[in-house]
Amino acid sequence: MNKKIIGIFIVTLFIGASLQTVSSVETETKYFQVQVDFYDRVIEWLIDFGHFPSVSACIIKDDEVVWSNSYGYCDIENEISPSENTVYMVQSVTKTITGTALMQLYDQGLFDLDDDVNEFLPFSLRNPNFPDESITFRMLLSHSSSIKGSGYWDFLPPVEDFHSWYPYPWLEQYFVPGGEYYDPDAWVTDYAPGENSAYANLNFDIIGFLVELISGEDFVEYCEENIFLPLDMKNTSFYYDDIKDNLAIPYYWNESTGKHEDTRDYFYEWDVLGYYSPNGGLYTTIEDLSHFMIAQMNDGIYRDARILEESTVEIMHEIQPSSGKYMGYGLAWLVSPSTFWIGNRRLSMGSLKYAGHGGDSGVGHTRMVMKVSDDVAVIYSINTGRMLYSNSWNAAELLTETLFLKARQY
Image 1 (cartoon, rainbow, N blue to C red):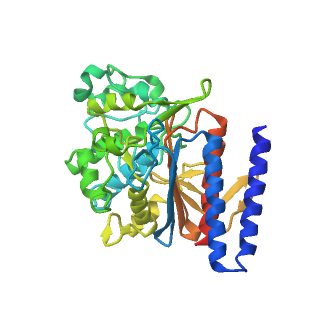
Image 2 (cartoon, one colour):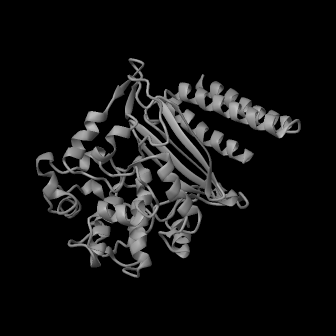
Image 3 (spheres, rainbow, N blue to C red):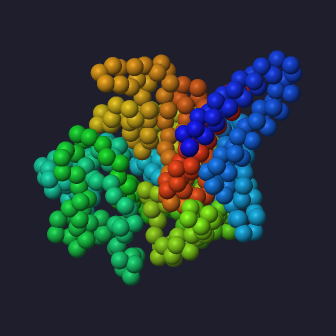
């Protein structure tokens, strides 16, 4: 049944878009109005189909925001609609911020991408299955370090010792054989570092720690001074207390009861402990995130502020050698290639190339992706998850395509 609904939706979407193109012959004003009404209706349908309490979204073209809007309720109980200042949890989109922080230090010549990170860490980071193989900055940034991905919350140190354990010595105790919290499942066993990629959150906890060690600053303070401030990201923080008054309440959709459940208390509990997550703990607005995306699209510059060198941005958006054939990983960025393989056949997508990142938890989803060939990007945040309910997953995927179609009118 879901496949039939999705199929009908896609046909309707493209027919609607085609009819709007025809209507533009009549008058430009009428064409614009039809476009706005049509896509708004599509987005509203997707919100209902996916059980999304609220969606905030924007479209960037030629390095500026050309459209933005919000829908639904960021607070269901009080029927509060989101605004440009509404803050969302962006989960793994955080990795692009953390990666940028590290690459700023690379711009300063403080390390090379293929340096062994053990030259900077206070412990030896080695896959015990391949003890002679170095782990480099490039490997951490591209998820090819041979660190294994698992459920992240299982990795946190004991609550009562949180302040004294994270990030160090807990990282050592978790990764090094003989450590108090050592887990052999933290490492892959069938390939050496640099030979393949496997998405693993903990790569970016180590990167966050390296930012502290190399810069000599607290990770959160470093990001505030070197990324958030120059990019005018005024409503962005790693800490719940900083943004709680403007937060889109993170809801869990309970399919069995047909209701959304408020999960704020869970996240506040960790924030009280002083925890920040370099791999997925950022809170921000669509507007703030658009400033960051524009800098990435504009060779490292937002307005008059340069946060990265042009050559560094190019490297970050290049698929690394250890990535797969269909969807690759750059340096803290997911990148789709302009060529892909079906069996033994190599097919070309011409100049089409996407770069960006998604973020997911059971109570939130954010997508930030640019179509490099067209210099266009879309960003949206939802205050519930897309992972546990098939309609939510499909609705989120269709929302991405809807926004790229909408971008054609600008």
